[in-house]
Image (cartoon, rainbow, N blue to C red):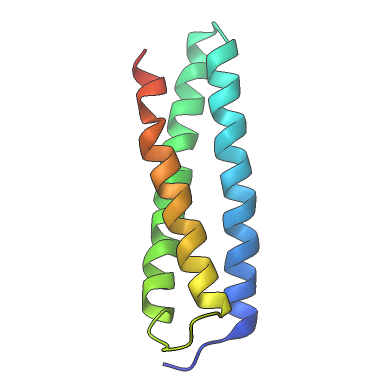
Length: 95
């Protein structure tokens, strides 16, 4: 599969935005007492996590190159770290 730099770059930007939103959701969840807002934050967190997981799967497909450094490797690593960070902090929603 021929890697598209433009596609990979767009996915990198999307993961960056989604990662920041996940952090903001967690912070908002910690500080709010409103049950309806907590429910919406939980649902949004779940949807964003699904999207990052989809991008991670795409990154795995793009990461078939033998090159050590390229955008697809970077995309793979960033999505992996975002997913791990979210899994590590997922117990926040069950406090």
